[in-house]
Image (cartoon, rainbow, N blue to C red; front, side, top):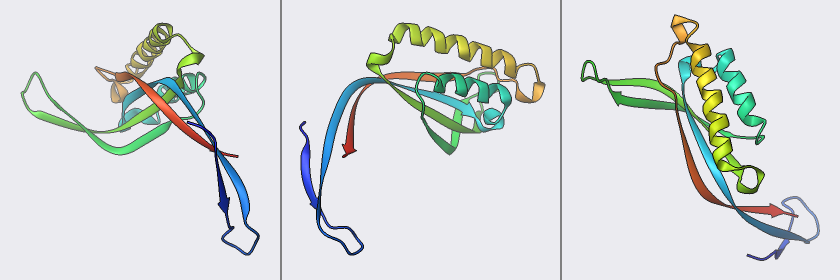
Length: 140
């Protein structure tokens, strides 16, 4: 895609002006971390998210969600309030395999730290990794 020019008129009184929109597209990897709301504010979770943000500053948090699964022991459907923490990392900023190992190590540490207190103990921690193509438009 190429840069485009546009004429705009400010909402408040003023003269028309020209702006440019510059596109940028690139390969990236999207990580989503599924975090129970009961431990989202826990210090171990905050530390985990700080370490993830050290790679790419900025993320989207989807809150107010419900996770569901089938309990293998009882056969019943279980539910739990969850948040999804999504971060997108530019593909040229890292090696994907090394990043996956680093994230796995951080997630292992998080699961271990959460198990120090019975109230925050988790038996599993999930994250997904998806190769995506990002289209970013920047107003100049």
